[in-house]
Image (cartoon, rainbow, N blue to C red; front, side, top):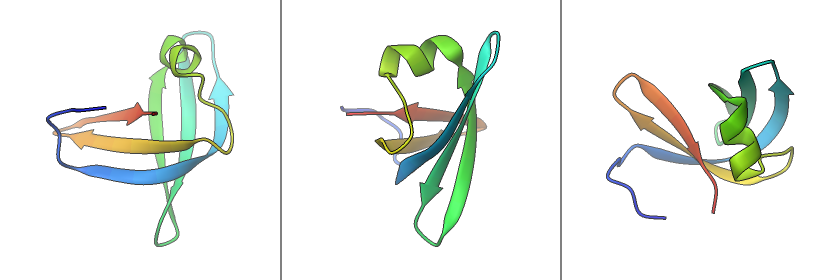
Length: 69
């Protein structure tokens, strides 16, 4: 996956809560800290994000996105 953002953090999904439209994805990163990303439910389904997945947190300006290889 190639992207222009340079602020990336590898982590592991610790929990996924699906709502009617949005999803709350908790991602454990080194330190030990957790980043919480609020992304669409559709994105969670499209990326097949689930507990234990290795993902990349991408921080761009005020946006936070989640990527998965």
